[in-house]
Amino acid sequence: MTPMLWVAVGAVAVGLASGVLVLALPRPPRVGLERLAPGARPLQQNRLAGAADDTAALADRVLRRLGRAEQLEHALERAGITRSPAEVVLSVAAGTAAAGVVGGVLGGPVLCVLLAGAVPLGAVVVVNRKRDQRQNAFADQLDDALHLMASSLRAGHSVLRALDAVSRDTQEPTSIEFSRVVNETRVGRDVNRALEEVAERTGSRDFAWVVQAIAIHREVGGNLAEVLDRVSTTIRERNALRRHARSLSAEGRMSGVVLMLMPVGVFGFLSLVSPTYFDSVTGTSSGVVMLAIAAVLMLLGGLWLRALVKVRF
Image (cartoon, rainbow, N blue to C red):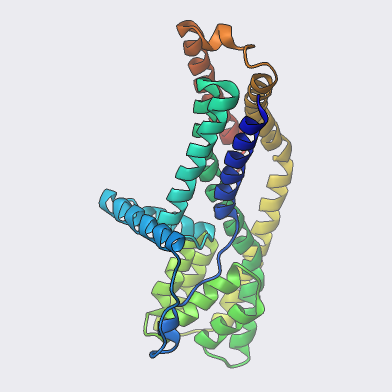
């Protein structure tokens, strides 16, 4: 390959990496200058930023017309990703195009299709991974949050003050979720509904029980601090059991990851080292059919391994 071609491939690879990093890097919330000061004028945007905003607006309209905007927004919200659905879709599309160009230049049409398909699949994996990590972190912090909430109630504070204490004295994502509940309650939303949405976003059945206990306490009264202490003890024991189960199934999960990635990695490495190595397979219709069958069998095997090592309780 000529040096100029390597430079072009490197530039495309950098664009791909920057598109993937959009999903991983958090973005701080931005507030328009006109909202902070009524008489202030918003800053002038350059042409590139204006074009990016117009493209994001167009992608947002397309998603809403297809009925996927709200679903994607909920998925990103559960994963703790602050990017808008339109920005994520554009980033994945740019990464897919860049990966297709790199694969087409380095390994031909087969590698082009593989790399282009790997980008959206990788984006789904990243979002699901971040969602699972966020839900697991919330589950690990829930017993401490309930203990702090029970201590605040025992000290004579109201439920809202106890929620505010949890939002200030805990770590993410618990602090973010409880801060959202406090802010929504301050603007007039029902606290029970706000807490129910926290249970939905975090996928925590344990917290759903806590929400039911708070709702019953608001209706009939009772010693909510004692109830939270008991629930906190139960959750602590369940978390210990869950961590023990994950440690026992760690070897099976790692074996599944290695078995799924090793064939793809070997195929990609050999395609880069010797582009003509797989011509006898990729250049014939029977070889393409064999590759498709192998991909389907790998997918079925991965799903089977995932079902074996996933512990539900």
